[in-house]
Length: 452
Image 1: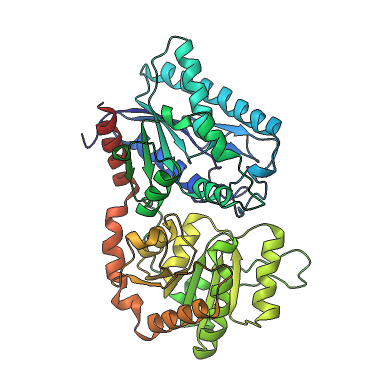
Image 2: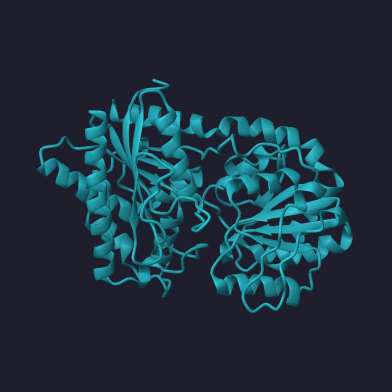
């Protein structure tokens, strides 16, 4: 069944990547899966995703965009493009959102059947949250119109489960609301299979929805695009000189081209400016290792809301006095691949990262990684490709111990030249994380569960 011909519908929670609207990881993954499924012989994927900027995506086929009148809502933490939380929305706003997506999904599913002459084998709703509610409605409406009931699959990315954790914990910013909604609507009674991105992710899902059949929940580690993330030939000096720093409004500083010829070593951080990504840990460790290695710089790729950007810039330059740290803002994937290729080590110390696609993408460029020993990275980061520092307390902000452990790990990576000794292992490991292989495996497993 390795390349079974299937007809798939997908509903995403986040926008796809564009210069005007940087995408979070799940949006990037949805787009990549859409392309991968459509590249499989005899397969079709039709998709819908929301956007706060675009009303269409003329560069992609078989996709419709739900243009929202507001920013894309987020489950918890922050997003590079949104600070609008689901918990801050009224019931009327939630219903308006659901109806907008419901109508467009119904229309797009009908278009797919008309264009292909096929019926859907299954629909995938990304995230374990309102997309399942939308698809529950759409499928019911289609059945009422005489269509066969389309099996529904949930793709569990992790952030919705984190939000449910906060609701159960009694966090005042996240009063019990949406987990209760999912239970009252019996949403997962209408879901036939659940895809999770790590063993931790799977356990958390079953913790929140213990009545779901465990045999129908499976782990599919996220794949990367090997046409984008590969080892580029630039030297560190050449690579760095292609990037210009980004600042924030009112900073009083000017953007500059990174002086690549000043450095022989580089540490890279990529991620959104959310507290659980623990950029504070990286900056505080940078103050230590940049003092020890005068020819080492730190590059920070990513962004957040204006207040968060200002906060981390001021931490770096005013509080810590860093002189060899460069913020380059959000970057498109080809540019991230260039940064990964010239870095000596990638540092991504998130608290309980649901999966950690940035680890895979960095290693695909031949660069070892350092992370925290929590969440998804534990499934694939070993001493052969880097290290995971102890993270028993899951502290946010980072403790002095975490900072010192990260400093020690970076020193070890630079002193032992992990780029040379572990880099080949990174390339070998990522061979099994191809996006095409992941999508073929998902189709196989879902086909097995649904007995297609």
